[in-house]
Amino acid sequence: MPKAAAAPLPPWGKPKNNVKIGLVGLPNVGKSSTFNLLGELQVAAENYPFCTIEPSKTSVAVPDVRFTNLCEFWKPKSEVQAVLNVTDIAGLVKGASEGKGLGNEFLSNISQVDAIFHVCRAFLDKQIEHVEGEVDPTRDFAIITGELMAEDLEMITNKLEARRKETRSKCSKEEKFEIEVYAKARSVLDPEDDTYTKEAQEIRKFTWSAQEILILNPLNFLTTKPVVYLINISEKNFLKQQNKWFKAIKTWLKENSPTDALIPYSVKFEEKIKDMEPAARKEYLDECKVQSMLPKIIKTGYKALGLINFFTCGADEVRAWTVRKGSLAPQAAGVIHTDFEKNFVKAKVYNYDAFKEHGSEADVKKAGKYGEKGKTYEVADGDIMFFLCGK
Image (cartoon, rainbow, N blue to C red; front, side, top):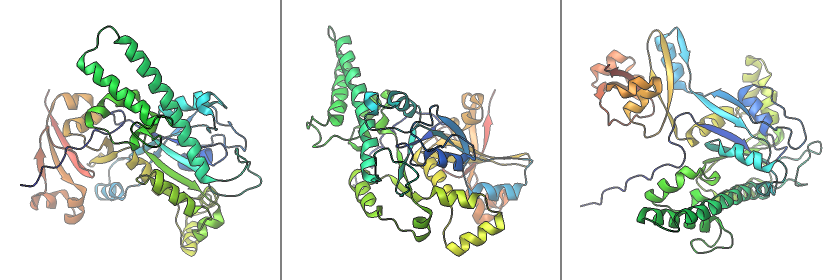
């Protein structure tokens, strides 16, 4: 008999649906300009380090052709699209974990987000100073990653010391295991400790058991947050889809973060097309044979947070609701109203793919693809749901 598939590991991060992603990077790499483009908000983006002191926040509509098609079919009075919550965090500098620049404050802001857009500069511009003196994307990757790891190392060192003091006189089996896991995490992050790894690693890159993840998760490590790498290049390079740093960037990511997404884009290009009239913009994009990367950035950030959508549809409203992947039907109902989760009875469900195939809810029912689901049903991305709840 074939072996049963191993149970999936619990995800890193807080178990909630209201999550956000933060724009992180060195000063003057295009973070605030990217934020402005995403949210069409005018936050400070001047050319000097630490211009952004307090993190700015916005909610960006998530492009979704499924939502558009459902709205066209139902023609509802109200349309409510899913959003990606984005935070613009001021630039880190080398030594931030030791308090340099405004490091401690910025690292604290990063701890408040659930995933990271790591914005890196791969363009030359004499008018825009680089805080390290010259452009070198892989060095910048290493600086940011190193600062996050150093902050995590300091945090777990303090937690481990405090836990050992608390349990010095009496230590249960569970507490002993917890301390062992803390010590293991500290070792993984410590560049001078090769007990578990030859080189220090981000917490998320090491192999942990489900039980170990459950113990470490409440500590909210900076290096457990999913990362999407955004490479800001010049308009000229974007139009040619070439850049002299691409090879080095791809090599670094393959060696250090092979599962993380990489998106090259150009702030200058995006700013240029944003102000065009729709017809002129379409003509220009067709001529250049390129497209805006903002929709891809938004959707990739949404996916990095482990988010999926279910829909509620009717003549009054079509709405895209956000839940974490793996959520059960009662949890999805609770996103609409907490009482719905408490009093959940069942859900009537069909998926958008069935709707697209058959053309209407009535035809989906005729095809036998409209069903009733109970409390153990795991919501699938694109489900169209109607909840039945008691009193």
